[in-house]
Length: 112
Length: 109
Image 1 (cartoon, rainbow over the protein chains, first blue to last red):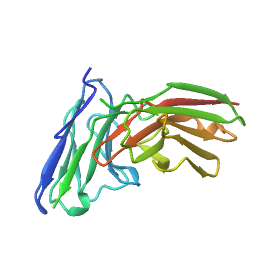
Image 2 (image 1 turned 120 degrees about the vertical axis):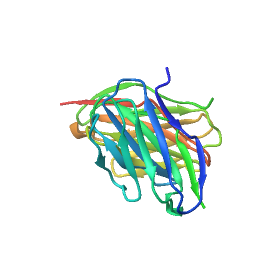
Image 3 (image 1 turned 135 degrees about the vertical axis):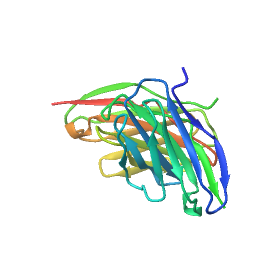
Image 4 (image 1 turned 30 degrees about the horizontal axis):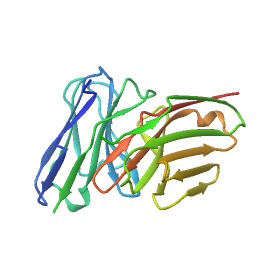
């Protein structure tokens, strides 16, 4: 049971570089989410996809883009990384928006 | 590996107190969190506690931490139907964050 898989687990970027965080789920879930977690602040929603083919902004979308490639995969892209984007990023999925969310293991991103 | 466990379901009557329990294994945890997931787009941070604290109270919410037993609880006083949701326990250290499976709280009128 893979559940929600995120890659990479760790990444260091220089300011201005771009990268894509990958997320895949094998539970046939409709909804997928990207969060960032900063110490003492809890999770903040960046973007979500309620169903395949749709994406919507969350609480902190600036500086990010997402793609719901298919039902399984939801990627998060940083076009021009900034030190303020240093964080731990979590992908999650759920059957629907009123269902329990399952989380990936997180990606620790450092922007120098 | 490190783990966070919580019961999956809890049902209470409106007006009663709810207590949601969580255990964790990582002795290096620095923050412990409670999140609420309602129908909609994401999780809501309810409260968090530093690992060197025993208790934190915020209006109807009381968090108790027993660091020796690695046991965290969330008490909701005067539970209302609007408190029906899934509650996630989570713990983090400097390197990682782990979530419990979530407890579905059902509040009956």
